Length: 58
Image (cartoon, rainbow, N blue to C red; front, side):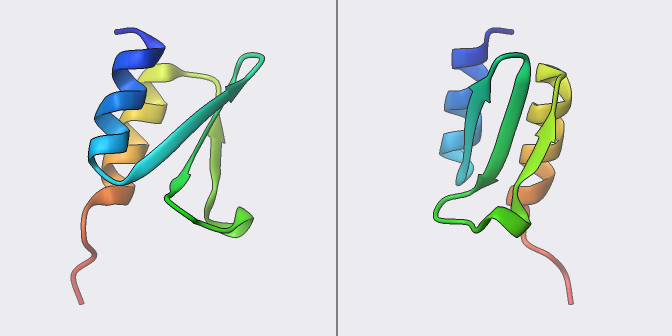
């Protein structure tokens, strides 16, 4: 999987992803820094981003 393909999948799910060096940052659209997650693995970014996008059950 490429960075661009993961970025597009997450964007479709409502999550934005950016990259600085080897670190991927994921967050909700318009999310504040306290909801951002950082990781170095592209696969982990995809997995965690998709989990973030799922609605939480109450």
